[in-house]
Each structure stands twice: as structure tokens, then as C-alpha cells.
Amino acid sequence: MNNGPTEQNEGTSIVRIDPDLQAIVPGFLDNRRRDVVTIEHCLRTKDLETIRLLGHRMKGDGGGYGFPLISAIGHRLEQAALRQDLVALEATLARLRDFLAHVTVIYGA
View (cartoon, rainbow, N blue to C red):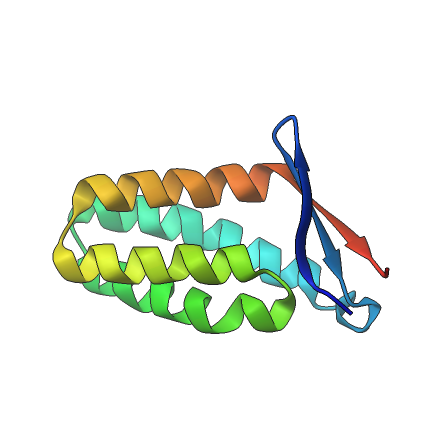
């Protein structure tokens, strides 16, 4: 099955996910929403190491859950934290927040 974004329109990202992952995907997305709150706090306190670690984890986990965009965002977070690029971190966090607010998951073909 081809997992990942298949359609984007009017601010909605439709992601098709293997039905075998149906029990764990909601928790994965909830954890990413919690990560948004954590990253916001870390930006306020300039805790770039925690952002780097969260980005690294997202980079590794996203594709396995059927969300290659989350992996790409995680990579960008990790790299921006290493460069201490607060502008890029804010922009990437906004992209993650937007994706999570507008993603629709469809299980199956």
C-alpha cells in the first residue's frame, strides 16, 4: 500500500494509511500535537537541544507511520536547531502545526 499524502486541497491534507496501523496512528498524531506545545516552550526558553532531539525522532518515526511529511519536517527541525536558526524553526513549527490541524487520515486503498 502506498502510504503518505495523496491529495491536498483547500488546506486539507488527505493521507492514506495502511489499515494495520489504524490502532496506533491516532496516538502518533496526538504525540506530535504534544510535540508542538513542547517545541513552542523550547523556542521561548531557547532549548534547541530538545528541539533537535524531537526533530530527530520525528524524522525517524514519521515514515514508519505513513507520514513522510512529518519525517521531512522532523529533519528540518533537527537541522535548524543544529544551525541555531530560530527563523527556520518558527517556520517549520508553523508547517507542522498547520499539517496537524488539517490532516485527514483515510485507512485503506
